[in-house]
Length: 166
Image (tube, rainbow, N blue to C red; front, side, top):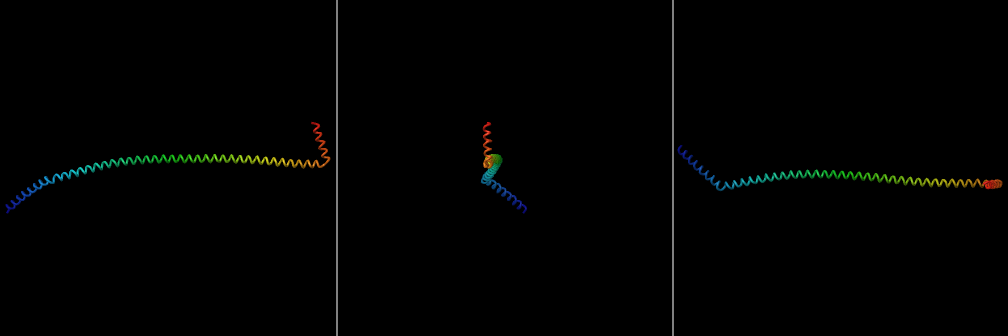
């Protein structure tokens, strides 16, 4: 039996080896090229994917740099606009102050002119009133002096005396 088992093992080994060689031959003949092509295609696909990923990474870095540049430019423009707005605001405030000062000076000059004209009118009115009072007082004094005949004759003589002396 040992011989039988030994023969069986040897025969089994022979057939297994023959089947293995046939299987390797069939795989090499029909499956090896498609498997290698699939592996090569897969390897090429991975290389392409890695290259695309690297390009995408570079593009993202470029976009990030561009975004940073645009952001810096936008900030600089914002600062410029804010500075211009502050300058315009300051100019408007200064112009408004100057205009208010000019208007105030104009109103003060007008008020001074009005006061001066009213002062002159008041002085003229006072002069007129003083003149009128003086005339009234003189009229009363003259009436009183002329009401008496002796005083009238004396006044006429005094006047004639003054005229003759001149």
